[in-house]
Image (tube, rainbow, N blue to C red; front, side, top):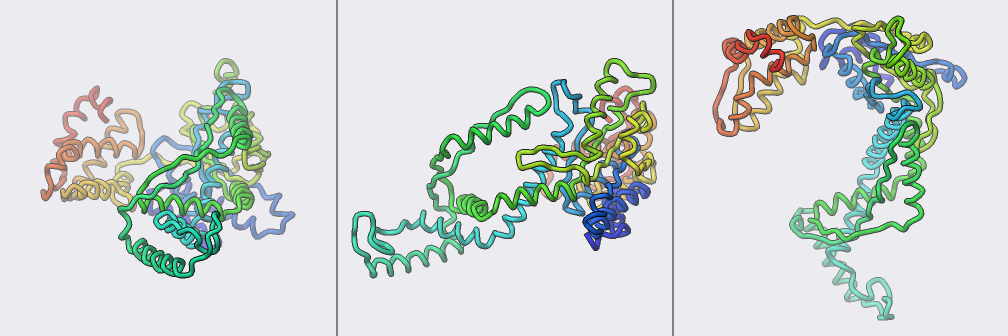
Length: 452
């Protein structure tokens, strides 16, 4: 985190998201403030509230992508939720606390994977020994008298030891990959799902844990090839090494200190001016339920209580029908940073098609190259695609950069279908080819509403 300066964060975001400089600066500062808070004294650290952000802008301009890339850059637990999916307390549906439980589960998975990587060498060594035991069972009397009281056999031990070393070398060299082994695998307990509103999901988890402890662990015999068995045994041994109390503690700490919640479609829960009846009542109820989570409260999860005081919330919405001021005043106050993202035009589309590392004009030729088809995209073709995207967005619903995906799919429709039979061929996508593929659709406005 110390090396993640605001300038560096913006540079990294520029690799994947075109434009929106103001939004990038805002999230970069919010992230840097997290590191700054960690450098403060304990007393002051708890007093510093996270700089939550509201992103205002139409769909397809990069709101979600900025938040997702930010989380990936910092390796923070990140979850994207739609505010419109939540319901007020007392209604059937998901309550707002479920997003914190989901975020904690995600953080726990991240920490568990890191611990598995740390324990990889030791776990592989133990798994290798277990695999050798399966491939070459120990003879009676090995390492002392056996259950039947047979005496130790030094010569037998020596012979077994030499054979085991040969098997170990063969195993490491991959000469036993086609062999199959049979061993006991623990069954997962029955999953319990409770239908209902608030806290039913958590009650189901708790009930499953309680019932899991009442019954002995069931196992079943599984037969698989050596490489697959080695992976499964390595995972089992790695989990045996992990201290699960430490795992849960670190997962909760990571959720609390570096978790990011991206709350999309927040404008859908805003009550429009003068509307306080019908669905607006439920929308306001969701805001009231959301308020303590954003302000800072404690949410009970299956791994322990999680405080939300320092989780970073990034809200986003188009705000066509409503305005940020239509949200509850208390909720507005918890999002001090507000940035407006710009609509995308022709020049932006050209840059989106060519500049990012995951640009579409790089993706499509790479996909078709797997079939042995070489596709070249000319500069005038890029400009033509961008022009069509801008034109369709003006004539119909403006869906931003997502329009590029629909247009590119239309252009490559026939090539993608016939690619397996075109191995070794070369194709050039130029402006004329783009026009020929899109001409009829764009001219027929009714058809383009369905196709593009």
